[in-house]
Amino acid sequence: MSTAIERFDDKTRQVFDQIGQTEVYEGELLRHRVYTRFLHWMVALFFFLALFTGFGIYMPWLFRWFTPIFGGGPLSREMHPWFGLGFVIFFGLQTLNWIKPMKWTAADTRWMRNLGKIVGGKEKHDPPDTGFFNAGQKVQFWEIVGGCVVYLITGIILWMGARTFGRWAVAVSYVLHDISALIMLGGIFIHIYLSTIGEPGTFQAIIRGAVSEAWAWTFHPAWYKEVTGRDPIEACEEARRRSGVAGKSTTR
Ligand code: HEM
Image 1 (cartoon, rainbow, N blue to C red):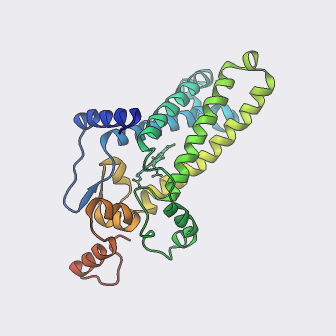
Image 2: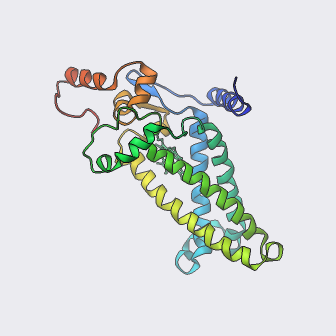
Image 3: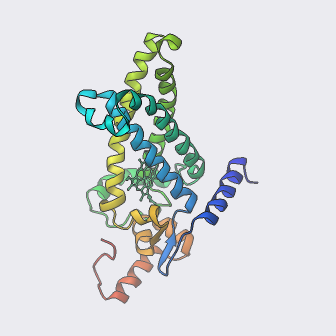
């Protein structure tokens, strides 16, 4: 039996599929539907708006040049909590949308143990049991969920101020708010690198919504097997034979 969240997500995905479209060509697989892509880019937009207005408040002496973009210092300060709220709301919807594929599994624990080899480039393919999202993606996702909770609580305290919550609560909130922002920013740098030049072919997943089969069997072999019913290693070998480049990876 489906839950209220699943029914809400299914319905919204259908509505968005009618508004936008996703072209999946031969040799490609559907990765992210319109609703997921819409949420992702709303999250990214509000994240950067909150980040840039936040920088102006955090270190005005260094980031003074950001504030005129938002109509000056006082207006930046006024808008920052609203941008932050937008970020938390859209990421909240994305959390409901991704809650299933983001569940931690035994395969994720194994992936983490293998991390050294993957980062060191010793493994050309992700472990065969890597599903729709790998453990690294899941860790980042849950870090953002935690960050959103921290932003929401500390953000409201900072917004309402010392008169409502007292000086101590405001002082602690400043520290937690800023630590959370710095951790998330570091993660987002890694995320942008991996989603573009780090793992070629990934960016189109969140732009067009489709990825090549070669990308799927390289980075998410278990997901490839689940959607095509084919063995990822065999599919890769067959593609190599057909293209006559035996011994070379087809994606890197
Ligand atoms: C210009 C900046 C960004 C680019 C190029 C980008 C790119 C991507 C791509 C290509 C994916 C799909 C990965 C896949 O299907 O395996 C993705 C997923 C995701 N994005 Fe972004 N993204 C950006 C900004 C952000 C921001 C600001 C956030 C949140 C603060 C965010 C959070 C996520 C999350 C949680 C996922 C799912 C898990 C993962 O792939 O890490 N992204 N992004």
